[in-house]
Length: 380
Image (tube, rainbow, N blue to C red; front, side, top):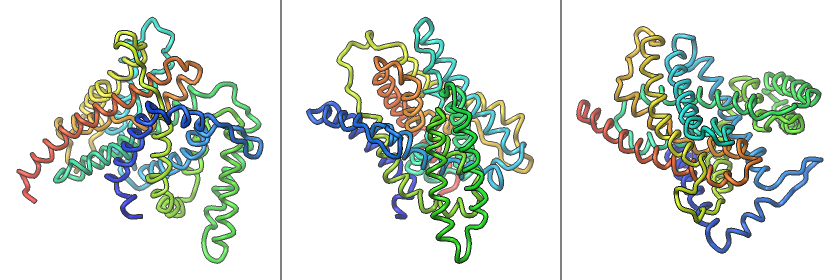
């Protein structure tokens, strides 16, 4: 289990699963896998395809872990206090606004403007994995800043999903979901002693019910994972995420990456690719690099806590390059944005994979060079 908890292993599994999905989709077994992906399974009045059970159901576990991490950082971690959170927050906002602007500029005149959120996301697991592989010798403050930035980036992504990908929500179902989430939160404060097992079972049932109610409300079901992660008592939540993390790294995220990457590579000339492909391909690596660097540079003047070492401009560029690895959340955004535009969905997936791949290569080079610089200053 400790191996699967490793950031390097998590990144490797994610990349391997996406590559395998893309490879198999373009072989003779591709049609059979896609048929399986579109197979409808009904459980307790909820009928979803296998692909949607993965993206709407299993991915809620990942978002639960993200929410617990976010709460920890806000309460006792690097985001505790406005002054400490301001610098990575401004960098994160820059890393959203600039890619979105580049996407909208490159897709101007097309009818695919709804894809602007796709290049705004950062994959925490993958970015930290690249840093762990190539960053031996880097000061810990770079990892801490990247983690804070990525957590805030995911918060923005969660808000985007909740606001822009929800139409005509069922308020009654949402109200019931709020009730079950409150009950879940209250029980989590009693999770101790001899009652731990029965309370834990009841909480699991309430978590499943909350997910079902959120799904029925019309809000994307992964938001249920976010809500439960935020309301659960902090110490029990940390213990639960410790148990869930290997399953998220070893099963949930690779399975989602494999499913999302099951696309057939279009047999067309580059000039025939739709505008969203180029918008995502450019906005993800270039937009993130420019946006996070600019936002981080501005934030260093506005949100730098006294007594803490300021990140150098070169270190900000390293973090910005890592921020361009969109992967998991960008693939989810692609599914949501182009759910009614299947003609560009596969091209969007390919653009996310290629854009993230470019960011991985650029980040690996920059992280390696920066790490070598610090090792020369402080040999290890």
